[in-house]
Image (cartoon, rainbow, N blue to C red):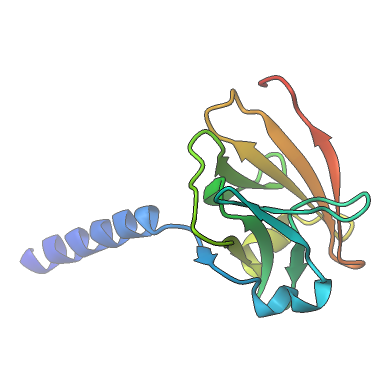
Length: 162
């Protein structure tokens, strides 16, 4: 009986630990090696880093390989994490733009989503991504990443909550 209680407690602790582990969002002071050949331009001003978008593209460079999908962001608006919305078949990135953090030099955030997490929601070689701005009544920017052509485009930006 004691063995089952210990196993139950360990299982419950493992589950709680799994729930509180932060999603893979890293802070770095340089553009990661994965993105070096993409010629990413950014602006660092007054403690904030913002990535400039390419013509018709998004200011969130995205790339993928067999291991994961990688999304790069400036570090002033803190990315809290991500989750997969199976019902809407979209990757949701939660970003806090209400409490930006100033930094003494350019910083970037790298979001890493393992392939097995996002692949089930890909349709026609395209991944829908919603950048959800926390504390702004679900205002969001919607992106579409073409896995075949490796192109990201802005699909829509909501101006009112849903």
